[in-house]
Length: 236
Image (tube, rainbow, N blue to C red; front, side, top):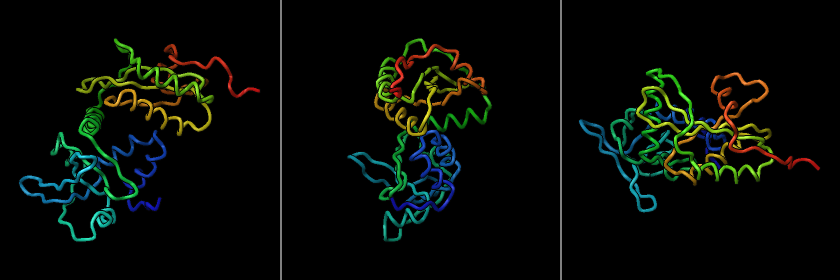
């Protein structure tokens, strides 16, 4: 990969590509950053579209270098804060840095989720955790299959979390007790969850069972694990 970050957003974007636990930082940075958008901005925004797998997306760029990689010819464009753009263009799909070594598709449900997260954080609603009325059986099965092939996972706990006053539904939070490359493991959890429940956002937290500090960490450890390693696969 020849992608060399030119600003804070690109640095976080590159980091998030290999470290799943940093993805919330990427979305927050995306909302705060000045994005470059092909089109015109007047009383209404007129944004160019590109096609990916037969579906239309609005292209946005994280720097002028990414825009030049997209088109060698001059492109009429404007800059706008990510959060403002996504609020104005609700329901639209976007693609970050098309034709670049570091890009990403953004679907409406994903955008709305992070917009709502930022609204909730700004409002300061209390985070509430609990058990779902219906267990996410597909998610649990997919994760158990993953964990059985990963000896570094000792246990996994699940709660649903939501912020008081939020319009977003509660979503799964997976707490893992593990050692080794937990960043890689978190990426695999996100991938397995996306395959099992593609329209559901999840979070992952690595738990320190000997010295939990956060109230949420303590609560997760108090919940019976949905997965627990019964055989030490690392022993001789």
